[in-house]
Length: 218
Image (cartoon, rainbow, N blue to C red; front, side, top):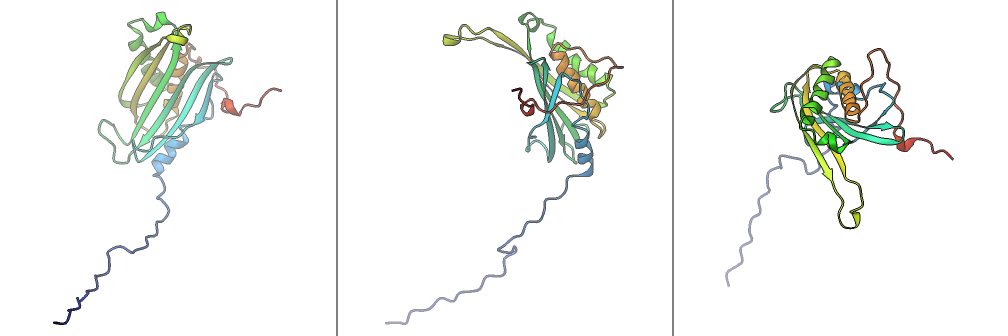
């Protein structure tokens, strides 16, 4: 019986990467993003508005931040919204520069208002006029205005019909200081809630904490 040949094993060359990889600390965000982020949460807003930090989407841009807001009259919530800041050092298609702001506002409205065919152009003018009145430089603005009607059926047939306005918009701020853009967004929410903007000579107040943090009255 012929002898069985023993195969010769060759040693593989050293792998390109170590079998154990050590990940360092993630790089710090760019200075331009950090400066803009500091202006996204204003120190003063009008008393009807409550602001809070909210999670920002992670897949739209390399860096992002966001704030949410509600507009109240007494204890009635009239409008809600969010403002998202996106930053991509290389920019993206349709942007004018490295920054993009994305705004959302939703407010309850009377049925006769939502049925007005001019509501869309008027609601869009609320945003553009607010940006202009605060001196916010921007480019490539676009968005949509949606009217939503909710009717109840079945065991909800007795529920009242509700009508809402939703405005979604985005634009590119042309500077790192976003405070004027935030102020314009706050004005937009108040207008959607039926509250006129503050006169120029009336100062805003320091924002209250989020309502869920308010102390309870015994």
